[in-house]
Length: 269
Image 1 (tube, one colour):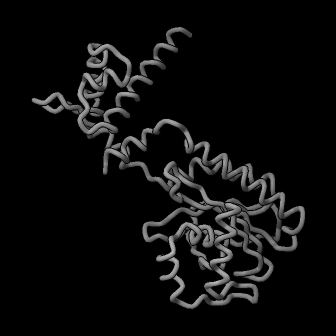
Image 2 (cartoon, rainbow, N blue to C red; image 1 turned 90 degrees about the vertical axis):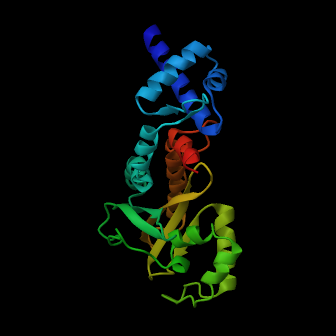
Image 3 (cartoon, one colour; image 1 turned 180 degrees about the vertical axis):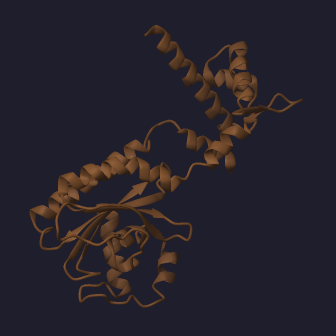
């Protein structure tokens, strides 16, 4: 047990060195030793080990220490959407078991839209179709409203230059209605869609935020309006909120210290 604790402390000190290097563009062995609370000789040995593995790089001639190419290579090979999907999958399975309805995960695409990357169907015979790889009209879908609620006024104004096509009699078709709806989404931290894209289809969506509060993805629960009404709807909304919270926790959002991905992200700027 004692040896395991020593090993953990060594790993923590190494991570501290990496974080301190990323946060200080003029990091040196001495400054890193102070940041990690280590004697300079001990810090130097750890830095040399990390350098041999490619995670740090010492600049010849001026004593500076930089993040190494191996750390950057590993980070670039990490697909953020894949990471989110892997973290979310067990939570989604638990959510479907609790509510017995279909749940999807959408991620932010490079063009600014949302792509459905995962779907777990409920056990009911009457359930939504497969939406994998599809996109929804932003003004007439719960996930789309979550995305629109993150936009600033200039971007929203540009979006509203085009007509909002009606899909049902319940579809929002005016800018005034949409702005009012998005204000509710921001306040409640979830979006509802009741028969707006398709008659008889209800959905509720919640955002999944990154550490910088940026939108990473959207978790959406969908099913027939007739089943998701009254107490069933309130239960679904509550369970979805808990699931989104579990995913945020698993991603490390809200921790006081940076994650390894944060370290690399800062180094890449």
